Amino acid sequence: MTMTSRQRMLAALRRQMPDRLPATTHHLMPSFLDSYMGGISSDEFFGRFGLDAYTWLVPLQGQPGRSWLDGNGHTVSAQWRYESETIPATDYHTLRWRIVTPRGELTTVTQGNRQTTWLTEPIIKERSDIDLLGEYLPEPCADVAQIDRAAAALGERGLVRGHVCGFDLFGQPGCWQDAACLVGIQQLILATFDDPTWVHTLLGILQARKGKFLHSVGSARYDLIELGGGDASTTVISPRIFREFVAPYDRELIALAHHYGQRIVYHTCGGMMPILEELADLGADALETLTPPSMGGDVDLAEAKRRVGQRVCLIGGFDQFHHLLNCSESETRAAVRRCFEEAGVGGGYILSLSDHFFDADLRLLEAYADEARRCVYDDSD
Image (cartoon, rainbow, N blue to C red):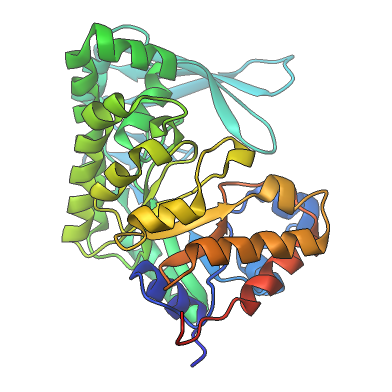
């Protein structure tokens, strides 16, 4: 029986066998849609190529009487506000930010271009700075009504995805990854040796904020909520740091999401193989992005399927750098078929590009989508 895109991807998330290989992309970047697709919407993109759709959204609102959103969409309160000024004459759009609280200020600088945004200076510069977070950092709530409206509008055409809230100016869903954005990854790694108690305190502050966000999400009609991030991959940190400073905090958030009936996909763009079983032990419903060595990761799809494929859905594994640019259609189709043969056996696998992409040959995107539709399951699978 032919499935809808929603049925197909949900079957894979349940580690069941759908009618054919589910195929999608990671988050669609606005710069790609503007440069290559004439500014069409994500929904129109998925329809254009016949891919299984995602609607991505994390609509926020304040807590009544305690916090609200400012003009930039940041969560603020009477004791926590953002001020910014433009720094001119740079190659990128550059802003200096001041975070004003009753007991002091935090500062940082953001830069951005059409593709993305980044920090050029850490927000947390002194150990005592985290005291301001612990005392004053406001907590955003999910706008459940907006999530539910998006789910109703999407219907059977795909899944509604979101992520656990990160720090407003520049953050990540996972506790460790959010801390890395605030402190800087090198300084954070050093602090795990020099002052581990301080690191645990910071992670606890961030975990509490994320937990309250998940409470506000409740039973909203999300299909998949992202947690994690690349700073917990083994191309960045050791397995020991993962076990001590990443897993305990994110495991509790996953359990909380499951309490409300939500599914979690754990995002680890980079090295995964040395901690693959430990990633599965977190209890998430799916693991992504399964980044191959040709893109700077280390994932062997066939081995990942063998080791954890009976415990968790796998999402990703496709090298968009080499198979959506500067290659033949037959090479793109062979790459799709290889992913299916290595990770698709028995279901429980969603073909996806390994993380964001900014450039692609549309002809090769068509081959990617078409070949995925040809990867059909039968009773012998």
